[in-house]
Image (cartoon, rainbow, N blue to C red; front, side, top):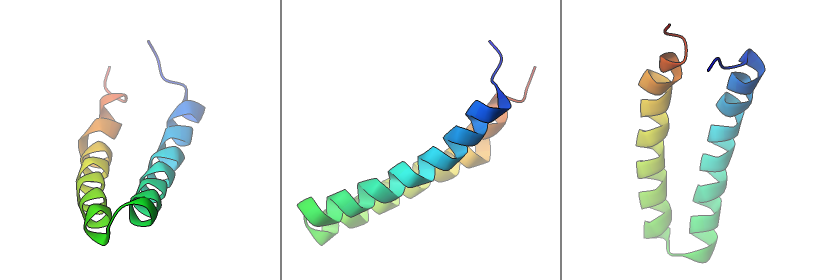
Length: 60
């Protein structure tokens, strides 16, 4: 299954937006420590996606 370049661009914009929203929600609903954990874990996962997962769709 091929990935449309427009879909890839949408995902690359959507992931950081969801990450930022998760940090804001965690900070508003839970304690500051929960926001910190959310930021750390989400940052690592987002970094792994952009470091490795983003390239997987380019391989044929």
